[in-house]
Amino acid sequence: MINKTLSKIEKTIQQDATLPDKEKTKLMDLLATLEVEIKELYKIHSEEAESIVGFIERSTHEASRKKKNPTLLKLSTDGISESVKEFEMSHPKLVETVNYISSALSNIGI
Image (cartoon, rainbow, N blue to C red; front, side, top):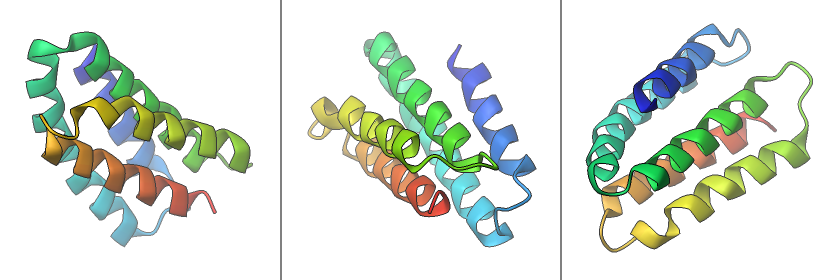
């Protein structure tokens, strides 16, 4: 499930015609880091890992919509932040990566 969702996120980013190449590259690099970190988390906390990736998928969708809805983007990026809070001590690299992704998606949606 996680691999499929990560692939969908990657495809959404790559196909976004309004996203500058520099931002695409940045997000793709972050996704590569996320993939490693989320797979480690999945081994122990599968439901939480799926929630994190699900919120990132929703945020990517909202950020890449032609007709942006800032409220929905904020809700989805807030969901990302909330979904990783409990892992700040045990998985700091995951939390850092997810927060960078959330910030980048928020900036795209502006």
